[in-house]
Image (tube, rainbow, N blue to C red; front, top):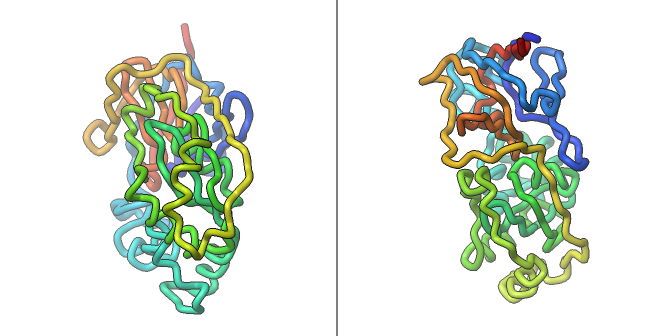
Length: 266
């Protein structure tokens, strides 16, 4: 089987284990079916996810020009506390910002490499947790807009991490913690503006399709290694895990055009 096209983050279906799908120029690939198969990945070029041009990808799947222009790459995406649509103030595209920011958001605790706090649109649950490689997550707040979620996250960052250690997550070195107890400890640090929005939702557990975890994960960089062959042993977060401990972050390579060839076992 041969596929070619610009990478986009893998789509997922919540089941046990998680089901992963890739779309390359209209061809859909059920990635779970490739477990224990040998795959060739080759660098073919670039294709900006916004303008479609072949300029090098700058960040988040966009060329440099589009990254500084499109609303999908604005600062409020990474820093939700900078959201201003609730005030009617435009950043790059007010209609888009109102659509994305003025909807229910969840502040959550997730356990991937460690306990972390995060923010996502309610409609993105549990997709956000899957993408982060979290094996469990617990909603802390459900608020009506992105700004409120952002100020709550900022208030909690001094008391809990907001980052995932990707190596620890991929090695599955999971610390057994009680997210409910973490929630009870952190409530006292929430700003008054969100005190009325405590979530009563229960913990969600996530099972990833992994046959073997890497011992010393090393990241595949297609700009340095334009051709790679390896046997797929697992999928976690947005990472493909190979038998030789190579890991490939599909999402961080969005906009890179690849050739993907699934070799037939002799």
